[in-house]
Amino acid sequence: MKIVCGTDFSTRSGEAELVAAAIAKRLGTELELVHVIDMRRTALPTALPLMFEPVEEMLAARAKKLEQDYGIAVASVVLEGAAEERLADFALEAQARLLVVASLADREQGAFSVGSVAERLIQRSKVPVLVVRDANRIRAWLQGERSLRVMLGVDLGEASRAALHWVQDLRRIAPCDLKIVQMVWPALEHSRYGIPTPMFLEGIRPELLELLERDLRSWVGTVAGEGELSLSVEPGWGRSDSQLCLLAARDRPDLVVVGTHRKSSLARLWQGSVSRGVLHGTETNVACVPRVAAAESRTSIVQFRRVLIPTDFSELGNRAVAAGYGLLRSGGEAHLVHVRTVEDRELSLRELEARLRALIPEAAVALGIETRVHVIADHEASSGIVSLAERMAVDAICMSTHGRSGVSELVLGSQAHEVVRIADKPVLLIKPERA
Image (cartoon, rainbow, N blue to C red; front, side, top):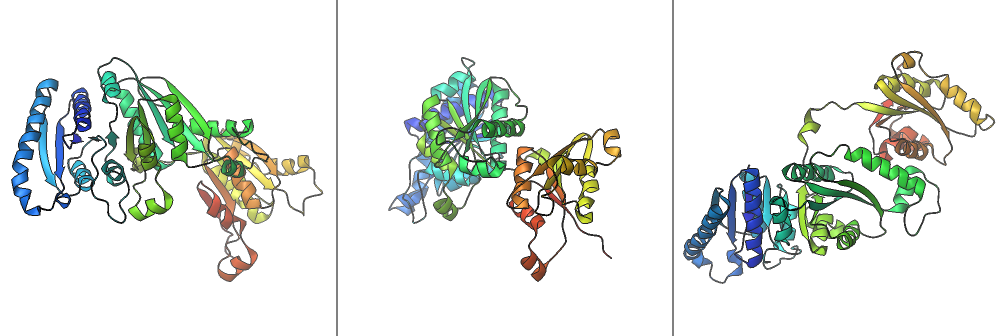
């Protein structure tokens, strides 16, 4: 797979060319130098044929010098159109492994154009984009003179997963000291995990921080490649991109990496873009990795290690127990939970826990499945169930539903329906048997 480098012949683009050539040499692959002529910036569109020849000669000369200096194959291509559009499309068609650019010159902005060519490029490209601002740091790393200090900003979503995979590829090339940072909004996390207030105006309560760090470690898993690794959960009350930029200014990494969801122009205007904000707000090198479906996610079988099974002790509620245990294999963990109601207020906590233990299937121990029981109180059963699922880091929730639909559901409500709506985990619903 090739390395593609976009250039506008500026000094900054020249530095990006050197980085791209050094990466191509290290990977043993071909480099494509691309220059895009945008005739919308000139009053003489008929001059396009006359412009191509001298530009092609100039680009070919730069390609030849890179070939001689780095001992790699370098091709050169001149295209016409909008720089971010043609570069993104060319890199995709070339099946490029990486698209390298500097902060390219801007073109005239239309009604919905925001920021520089580089900023628009990272939103359009389906190929990872490296925006070079300090070539010396990256070249020293590729030459084996030092480790590359990388800060990876994550939100535990698919785009962040793609960025993590990309960083692991970097660590396979040469050692990278990686710091993985998750920016969180304390108010949201207190609610999600069911942690009672008060909240700290600065920092995160220790019991909440412990849960957040646990889930971040679980999400990251084993990181391949060479170099040091550190994880950090940071509180933020504003935009996550602004907070990440402040951290980058403090820690001064050689490279900041973020995932990008490739939102439309209109969506970016309304919702903002973390990747664009980081690119705009940092002074170091930035890599933006587009959200992609990892190859293993299409082929691997999902295995549930921990399952939460709520019950109200009714015949229907208890039907979810057998199904929940059925999702687990040897070494799995079942969490039986009951949300206290007005009806069982007279029963003690010990009595309710005993009723939950009585529901444990006899075969569970023989199958190597561990059981934990929980009795909780919450103003809504659904919120209590979902918060407990987050605190216990379960992989799925299995619960019964009355199977109501239409008007009856609107009138009577459905805790199961609400769990499905607010849970960020798979939910298996067990419907009643038909008469």
